[in-house]
Length: 390
Image 1: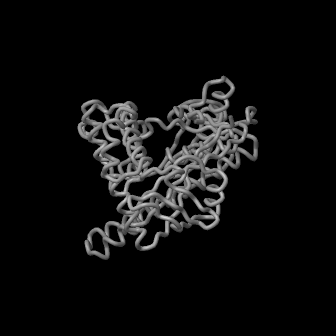
Image 2: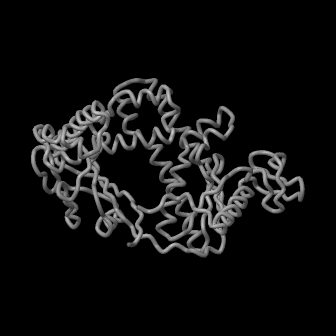
Image 3: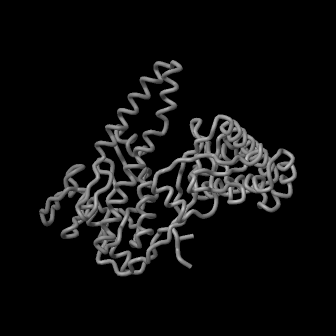
């Protein structure tokens, strides 16, 4: 069986006025039903999906949901509790007894009225040549609902779409988010060397091949967005609130776009040169890094994990081996002679080895150390921490 990378493709629906009301009503109905199923699950100690179905299926049918829609509501609810349990085990909601964890464990999961509803091919069919879909609603089947997407998205849907598609409403606009499975290239088992990637705030990413993605532009963009939000919030008028809503998530989209560009550059370089990629292990990054107060907002707002995830799935698609390494002391060790001393790091940008006297940009030095650690991880046969393909 060929391993595949799962990628989501988003297209925008262009429903007519009457279709908008039906789609909105459908989402609200299924999410109200999901909230009810969640309450039942919580009351009964979150049973398995099959048992939960016995307690809820008949009522969901009575509420006007079709057979497949009812099954998806039950599965969506059970999956939400599975995710919650996984987050608790991983410590993402704090330690036992913490306020956030107690709040999450003490009441049923609630679904927003616009939350995503999954559809399978029996509930939703694509007409890609006409760029329309036929979709189940509580008012019956809606046919010839138009959608638009990029040329790449349409090709991806035609060639690789598999599994479920989610319907979601965001700021009054409906989207379909489809899962596509892209076959992986055979992994290069004999990389010539490794590209070390040092992640940071001043420079988003610095590689041992000389590529550096500066963070100045993103910082300026964030500052402009923050200043604009403050001005609009201080006005408090209806027009200001409309503009705030319109600009919602713009910063996140901008940062994600930069992460895509950076990750594509890194992976394409490794693929072209026959190298692997070594990334820093990011677990506990926010806890172990010590920063000035004015830098903390930058650390907590930048998507380090998102960038790593983008590099990871692009590497799998390209057949580029990727390993995670312990970043300890990579900023203090000389990449030329190996001398380790805290005083080697003169300031944020400058590294001067007190043993051999070499002077390097601090991020360049760290990236070379990460590359060397990546080679060690690979040659010693240590298992990569990249999740295995599903």
